[in-house]
Length: 219
Ligand SMILES: Nc1ncnc2c1ncn2[C@@H]1O[C@H](COP(=O)(O)OP(=O)(O)OP(=O)(O)O)[C@@H](O)[C@H]1O
Image (cartoon, rainbow, N blue to C red; front, top):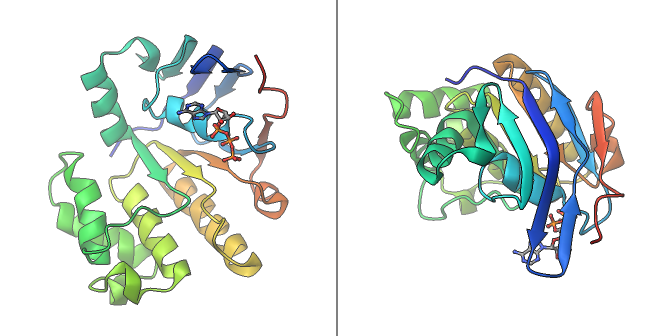
C-alpha cells in the first residue's frame, strides 16, 4: 500500500553494450498521471520501464520517485522499492503455469512482505471479475482472463506506480480496448501513476498523456 508519488526523470541516458545509446526527454509526472509511451520498435520503450522500475541502471541522469532517488539508491533499496511501490504488467503475462490464479497473485504479494497476502490476492481477483476462476491454472483460462490475472498480480499490493509493457498485444481489438480501460480504471482507483507502452493507437488514445520516443534512439 504505497503512496503514489511524483515521478521526475532528468537527463536520462541508457547504454546497451557499445552500440546502443538511448537519451530520454526529461519528464515530470505528478502522482496519478496516466501516460502512453509510443514509438517505433527499438526506440527504448521497454528500456525506460526497466529503468523506472529500478531493474536497469542508467549510464547517467536521475530518476526520482517523490523524495526517493532511485538512480543513487543501493541495489537492496532499489529491490525493496520495486517490490513495494511498483506493479509491472508484462506483454506475455509471465504467469507460473503450475500455480492457480490465486497462487500466482498471492506469490506477487508475498514478496512485498505485506500481511494477509491471500486476502489481498483474492480481493484483487474479485475486483477484476475473476473471483470464480481463482482456482484455475493459466492453461485453463482464456487469454483475456490470463491478462486479468497478470493485472491482478500487478495491483494486489496497491502500488503507487503501475508500469505496463504492451499489455494488450495478445488481445483482439475489443478485448484490447476493454483491458486498457480496466488498467486505467484500476490505476485511477489506486491513485497510481500509470505508464503504458503500446503500439496500438486506439489504446494510446485512451490515456490523457503521451510520450513519443521516436527521437530517442541512436548514439
Ligand atoms: N540487453 C540488451 N543488450 C543490448 N541491446 C539491447 C538490450 N536491450 C535492449 N537493447 C537494444 O536497445 C534498444 C531499445 O530496446 P527496447 O527493447 O527498449 O525498445 P522498444 O522500443 O521497447 O522496442 P519494441 O517496440 O520492439 O519492444 C534496441 O535497439 C535494442 O536492440
